[in-house]
Length: 218
Picture 1 (cartoon, rainbow, N blue to C red):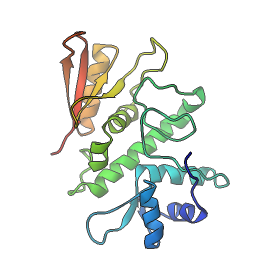
Picture 2 (picture 1 turned 180 degrees about the horizontal axis):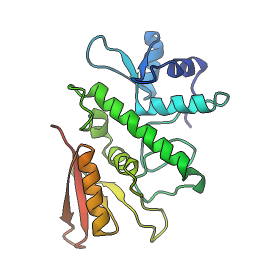
Picture 3 (picture 1 turned 135 degrees about the vertical axis):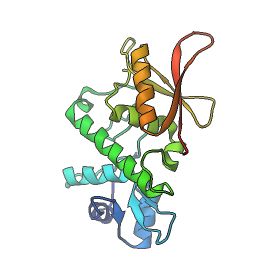
Picture 4 (picture 1 turned 180 degrees about the vertical axis):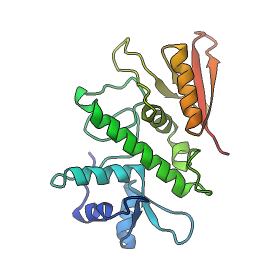
């Protein structure tokens, strides 16, 4: 079970710069946030600390419900059903209460946090290509890019069509499946616009088309 934020951690996160997510605190406080995945230490001097996408979500939760602090985790698949933000890879059960405008706002905020993470961690401050976090969380990163662009993930029930992002034997690529050719092409366009290299391929045995995508490096 995820441990709730301490009062000191809540104050630290709420006091972060609203634009950059830059944090101020003691070394012990900042290290604790890094350990929990809510902050990262910039690799270049002066080695300031900044909120991760998970940290941005934690700040929003703390501001929305100051009397009931909770700690969202970083985007992960499949989605949690416990009120914690998670990128939807498709095929996971999702409660009705988690749909609608609130989810749209959560996804938009998570994507903005990801762009900020790119800006702060890519050596040239570029936001048009994936950062190191995305390269180690391929399914979550690709799913977030798709959902943020308005694509609909597949439901858990049979016949509930939508995209599905899955791991592949290749360590730097994910597969994206879609119910029809137009949706598949739209996923390619979205991923390419989000900094991924993406192309359509055919499964040898089933002859079904799918997208193979990997984070662009340059």
